[in-house]
Image (cartoon, rainbow, N blue to C red; front, side):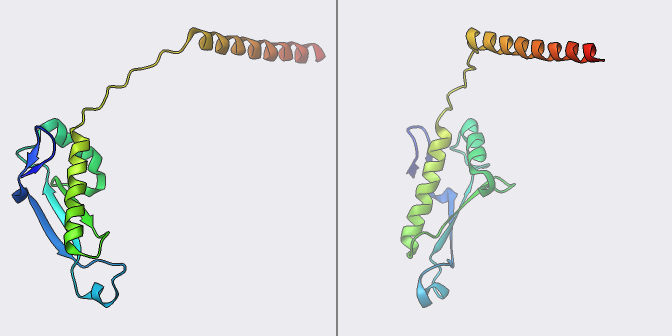
Length: 141
């Protein structure tokens, strides 16, 4: 069991790990050994995830989430399978923790009265300038 938060834990059977060949450094070894890890976690059918966490997780995952609701995390930062596996699981845990946080609701800020008054005064000033130009044009004709 992976303990994510106090209330959320994931059974390790729900996580599927595939080892794939990684690009990048590694010399001749890179062509022979599958060190990169592709972690798959079925968010849509995870029984331990509350619905609101599932929705936030889908939003946070973005392109990493398939249409079927499967989250795919690819880890290829390290040269060993073990480190990449730990990295992928850690990234999954961090993503779920972030989704579990309830976002603080945005409070609309009120425009200060002084700012509104200055804006209206500037509009009046520009209007007056343009009106005075119109009267000059009419008097010239």
